[in-house]
Image (cartoon, rainbow, N blue to C red; front, side, top):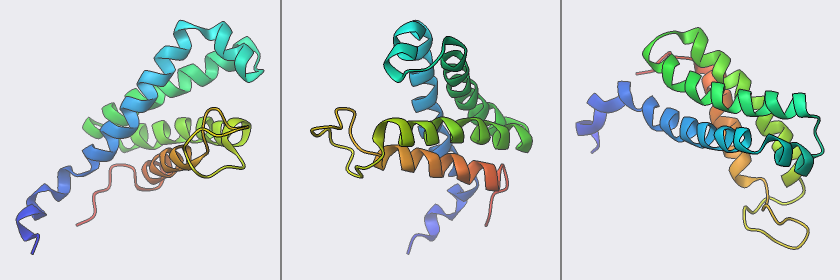
Amino acid sequence: MFTALDGLKPHAHWLLRLCLASVFIFHGSMKFMNLEGFAQMMGLSAPIAVLVAFAEVAGGIGIIVGGFSSDLITRLAGLAIAPVMLGAIFMVHWGRWNFMPAEGFPAGGMEFQVVLLLIAAYFVVVGNKISN
């Protein structure tokens, strides 16, 4: 039924790459614009806040660059994103699944963050290997 789409399979990874990269490049860039505020809001030291912002931007860029070049870049980019998402899940969103804000969860639950974590984990495991 969907055999007409089979020719697009080798390029489908770009859907996940663009989704993941755009979120992390945007959020990391926003953190760099107000590192002090981000660090204070999260209770992080300034050096850790810089590392988080850097991991987000570098991870996002690496996911895109890796698609054009190296399997290693793709895997390292996914690896850079994963601990950021684990931190977001456990420090901010843990205890509520639904992404909607609620009392005690003004930033919403962990649904979206888990999806991003699993996409990053996919790139760590698969790299640039495209299955048929």
